[in-house]
Length: 278
Image (tube, rainbow, N blue to C red; front, side, top):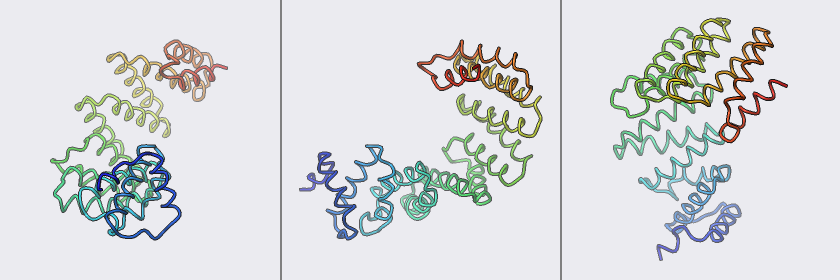
C-alpha cells in the first residue's frame, strides 16, 4: 500500500540507501519516487549531509520528482545541504532550474525571493560578485519582499567590497546596521559592527575601528548581554597586545574577559582568553 513507502523503519531506509549506491538504474515510477523521498528524508534528518547531497542528480531529474510542491520541498532541502557542504555550484543549479521556476509557476512569491537571495549568496561564494550584486540590488529595490532587509543590504555591501567600491561598501554596511536596529535584530547588528571594526583596522584607521568596538560594548551593556561584553574585552585585549604592542593593557583586558566568560556558556572564548594570557 501507499503507506508502506512512507518513512519506513531505519533498517529499511539503510537497505534503500545500499540499493541506491549499488545501482544507477532506478526505474521511473511512483514507487521509486517514494523510496528516494524516504532516503532523502532519512539522510537529511540524520544530519548526513554529504550523503544527502549525492541525491542531487535524482532530485534534478523529472523522472523521479515530477513538478509539484513536493519537488520544491526536496529541492529546498537539497539546495540548503549543497550550500552547507560547500557545493555552491550545485546549490545554484537547484535554485535556478527547480526552485525559482516552480516558485514562479505556483506563484510562491516568498519562495521566489528566498531562492533569489540564495542564488546571490551562492554566486558570491563562487566569486561571481557582479552578478550577485545585481540580485541583491533587485531585492533591495523590491518593497514587497519579506526577506530580512538588513541581511539584503549587508550582502549588497559585501558585494561592493569585493568589487572594490569601498565607499558603497561602507555606506550600505552602515545602512544595514541602521536597518538591523530598526528591526531589533541585535545579534546581526553586532555582526555588522564587527565587520566595521575589522574593516577600519585593515585600512589602518584605528580610531574609527575602536569607536565601533566601543559602540558594540555600549549596546551589549544596555541590553545586559554579559557574554558579548566579555568578547569586547577579549577583542580589545588582542588589539592592545598585537597592534599597540602594549602587553600590560592587553593582559588587563584579557583578565576582565575571563572574569566575565562563563565556560559553560561560551567555553571557546573563555579558553581563548586564558590562552592569550599564557
